[in-house]
View 1 (tube, one colour):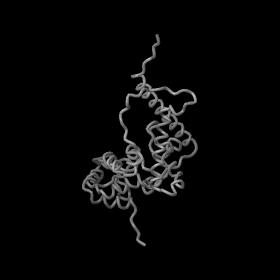
View 2: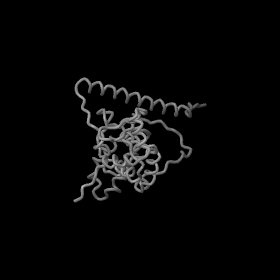
View 3: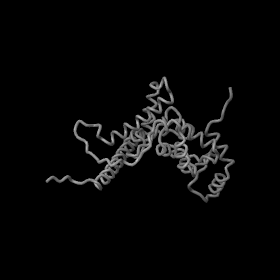
View 4: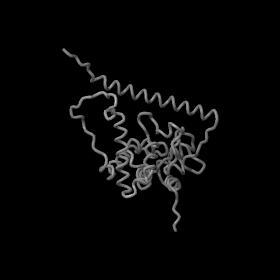
Length: 245
């Protein structure tokens, strides 16, 4: 049996060999930079995010954990980037994540390429016709893609991993509300492998818990209203009232 260093230990060791991060550490020690922070164990942070050194194998390991782990279920580049940037930082993260996702063979099999609409018109939903609800259909498409990825990854026992698929969806970034559904409900993201060694667990009690919950509800409501206003504005640009003679 071989004992291997944790991801946090490997990052800390690699930071000591990264010239750019060492330069940032020097500025922090000389109090010339307030953006970066040095923890007691020597780990360099950018705000609350761990600075990933410029080591391709290490950054790839971080992205693989955020994408291929059973609790992740192959998120898109936007969701994956939004989730990763809560815990890690490096200058080219967004570009690296997009390229990493584009090379995923599983996603190439389950996700169709988006093209311009072929002259179709917008039809409003009627009662008892939920299949015409565009917002609902978009959510169903996301779940279908996740389920296809689950079948490809786990094959014969894919149904044993449906709870992990549910966790992956509720714990990933949602553009409509601006946060993950789990975070909107509980005030923080559920801790997973990519942050177990990094993020401390904060406990809320009594009035503070109530206040945090109320703030989250207001934030979600504002995000949903903004999303609806944007959809309304986009629809009204091309909508014309029908005239009959």
